[in-house]
Image (tube, rainbow, N blue to C red):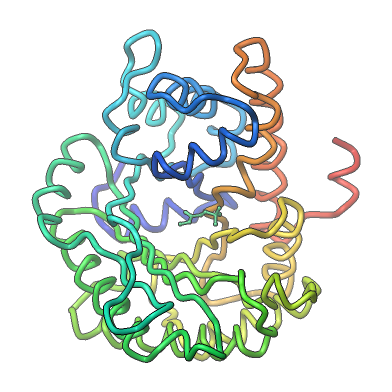
Length: 341
Ligand code: 13P
């Protein structure tokens, strides 16, 4: 496969394929395993992820790349094969989460800044040798209007960090996924999500230009424009699609390699229906696909529940969700397809 950044980025969003975000930190995967009653150990995390990466139908047909966590990119399958080689054998591209997480932003209670730039050049060189051809950095923007969150300082600092990360990735021959996540956890309405996302993306692209990042060799991983979970309102897929595309037309250059959404706490089917509605009102200047964590993994996690006897059922659950999201990335999904399964 081509090593040019723009070709890697294009492959990541090609043919209705999308990304499997399997880069949960050890803390986050423990929370997921607690729900299914599985103890989180290096071996159980390996067994779970090996089950996903060996799901041949899902991986070969619908998944263009996998975002890994540092532990996973170093791990070997039970039979000794590096997990990275199992992913590559399916035709998917290995990627790596390189940020060190969102930490409280000093002086701005309620805001966070994502850390991890120190030593990043050296870490990227190591990850390249391990096979990673794209990376991910997630900035977290919460909304709490009463507390003045997010501040302009938080939006600016996070955009600056994303741009420094992106430039370092490209220097290393790695495509940066730039992820400025405006959280859907708050009590805000859809209009507020739109306004905060607009301020965030405007600042992000200003910083990416200033850092001389090659836009064709980047992927944007954004939130959709939605009402906050605590607002008690659920936005319809049509409204989500209309507002999300309006936002991107105003703020996101047509030149970028593509767009791969996070699911952010939407239910599996909501994340699929919204992605489908977005693509159904195309054509758009960019490919718009999925880079889902929870919305791809919740069903297979439950089906697996830590038992090797459940591997085939869990792989089938993964294949179903990946298939539905593949159709949504092409604007061809129908709700009836969910009941049929
Ligand atoms: P979710 O789809 O669960 O939001 O995870 C995607 C991701 O990679 C968040 O950084």
